[in-house]
Length: 224
Image (cartoon, rainbow, N blue to C red; front, side, top):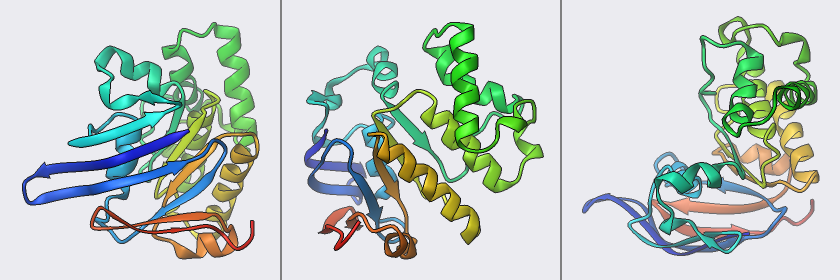
């Protein structure tokens, strides 16, 4: 599903975020992207949803070369991809319902379909009773679950999560991981960037390790 060939991303001659990265991720896989701060994890994910363009190399998603797409085509790519950020990126002036509905409305979905899917997504994360609250009225864990509902409401083929549990306590982190596991069980390909090695101990999956932008490890789990 996801193929990278000799991908390099340079911000300047002496700032290389990703270097000569070649790997493949299959449909329905669950993969951790690990490495120290500055290893290139975020840049790697940003290239997958076309927020960054590689300096050289090719990235294919479902056999489509996304390094060649232009501005008007990017929204169509992103309809297949859900993204969860460490800092949530919720719209503070909008309600929980409006935050989750935003992506569906951008796709031109009809109102009754938006309403049905938003409620289902919020029920999945256990927050259907928070429809009319605003993000700042919620805890950090609740805000992250809203962000996950927003990512999943479009039924993405791929879910990208960048340090989604970085600011959350252990109990909330486990709840978040269960949501990702359920999405993966439904067929969504999940890529989770994290520096928390305990996640893989509790939820063993394939681990891709980056160091200064280079691929230095690609380990399959002993058990799942």
